Image (tube, rainbow, N blue to C red; front, side):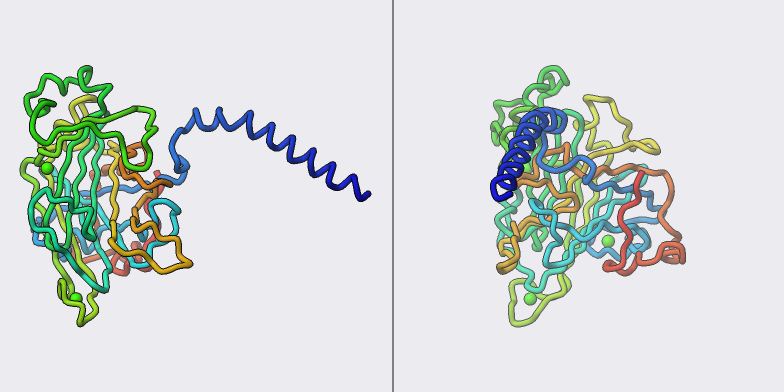
Length: 324
Ligand SMILES: [Ca+2]
Ligand SMILES: [Ca+2]
Ligand SMILES: [Ca+2]
């Protein structure tokens, strides 16, 4: 008996290892990304029928009624972030709107120059992917922004980017890019355009507290941005997707928040929290971005959330994004 137990255990592990060796390549080939495909967040973006003023305050009827994301979770582990962070998307015929609600006891910012490395401050980030390119936006609590446009090197010629003067790769601020913590992306390297400015972009921040003053404790800040659909044409070009989107169209968008601090041990806080985690320290994986489906349905009436949508005003009681 004494010998049999280890022997059967050894056999079990040997068989398990063989099975694992056999399956692993198949699994990794089928889905080569570090976060499970079936755990990528989904969201339905609805239209706003009333105007949105880009002042950083998310107090318009559209924002009051919109379905917010779940609480952002650690980019690597998927565990809930220490502070509450939510985002939401609205749209109309002219614009895409994105809002962020950021709980933050000590609001701070230092960078004031456009395109300064905003990721070195506490920030919110937005990525929007087309088929063969994606856009990155970052903003700190001063409202200072940073933007980059990335094109997958392999599709630079075939998708038509090489023929467009704004994507001249010998221009200033243009350089190769191969990810941050996930440098084995199956699509390979990208060309980054740090000189890119999204035409017509408007963005603003509202601080609910005092910035760079730690004598008090702040509630946080909200961020609001508006992008004209026509400005997303360089993303829409490769697969000729509709601008504005048609009912049911899906875009991949990433929403995150990066902090210069981390929650104390034993928490394993990477310092980056996202709507849809990536399993790795790298935002640049469009295959893991939240699936945003655009609906022509209008958000709940201007009188606020309907009784059938409990929690729309109460971020801690929100339902998960609706499944398709
Ligand atoms: Ca506003
Ligand atoms: Ca830029
Ligand atoms: Ca303060």
